[in-house]
Image (tube, rainbow, N blue to C red; front, side, top):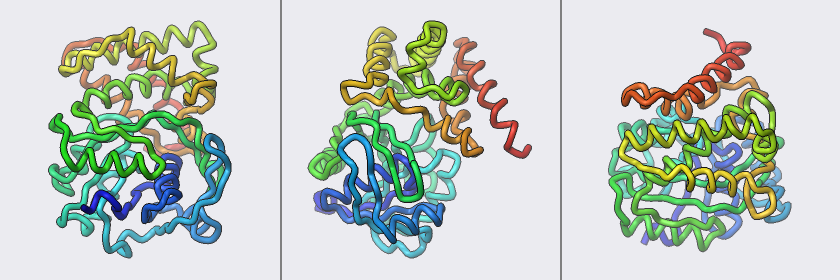
Length: 316
């Protein structure tokens, strides 16, 4: 079975791609990291991938490349690039599909699987999500902030043999993963956390736990969760806002394996003057809200503030 000892390609080997690829390689899977950042790739090939933080500091030998055409075989391709890079990334690895290879999107926001499926075949794409958080501290160095669950599943909403097999393999190889029979619902639950904290962290430069320690910001967080949950309900995914808030509080915990000590990846994009995923995360929820007649004033304000920061360095 190809999913019992699969060959893994990680498309987008920054914070989360590097972390996932490193964990799987550390525990015996054949992994190749694919990323356009030449300095990062060179550091990994020269010195190994350095993972620091939760789980202990260590160096993991793993292959890395900037050249997708050099890849000849893969059983599972993890897409962990930014959402706006999906089309280019999928086209670059398209030659790996056609013989049973599976793509899994662990990306934030909505619509990633649709873009990948249009290029790679919808039948070859699984949905994924994780509560983990990571940060690239330097070329070849990734910080792990937590030890939280990861899920994968069929987009049609069922438990399949391949999803179960991949989840079990990942779990055996250092990345605890569960197969979900309703991955879209799970992704909406994760999205609520992204919406609640991502933009505020980007604008304020605060960690998740620091955001929740400010009463005024905590109220903004909860209002955005309520708005996003209302949009999810309009889309057919009824989420309990009390449960959503409880999940959020567990995520920002700094003592029980949560990721509260981390700033959002959106903040990292702002610091490095890169395009953010505001359109795929907050913007996607706001657009769906308008389509369903569900008001999202808090989320709209978050989009505007991040767009304002981006305007200081993005052209056009």
